[in-house]
Image (cartoon, rainbow, N blue to C red; front, side, top):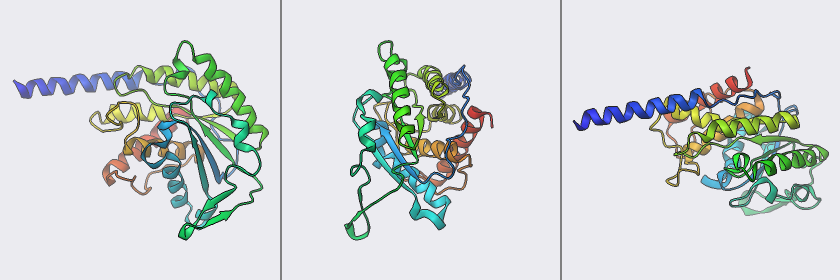
Length: 273
């Protein structure tokens, strides 16, 4: 009896995940499939705890790009500006480009401080809203307002904006399609790329329902979730398959390969490449 019940439960979970994936794609299709800058080397991540969990998403992403271009690995850098619980409207994007502030100095070997003088502060700014804001009845308009404001500010400062599509809560899979739709609309409206991380989560859950992509709170990413998000950013920005990349931190090799495939398949399908 228990065995039959377990099989029935597994079947129901698999059916639900299949329905989620089938319904996950935004009705609106992205019109921007390229980041808009050749060979970007410097990246600013702007967001909240979804980004800073697991020792920060920007570090996982930076490791991917450095390993993919070992000869020029020192040229790549990434900075993260995150505020717990924040939406886009909490961030003062203008201040992130002011002189003698972000990236003015950095820590190098032996914990020494090195002072920097960059001609271009950042090539790409990857930004996200709060996990519910783009689909919240009160905050949805705020999301679109600040996606436009921040995109304009970023472009004025010589960088390219990118919107990072977040994932549904583990117990609220219906969020996936709604988030995908609003992020895609915002990307098209502002003529900026959208990274379909939320769709990658949905696809991974469909293919492997038992994979742990979330923390116990069912919102924040596990190490595997952060790795999948970083892979999806890499595949989107560089239009290259991450297959063969080093395994994620605290993620076994077999699961890492699975996530690499999911990220690339999601990106190819979303952008219809």
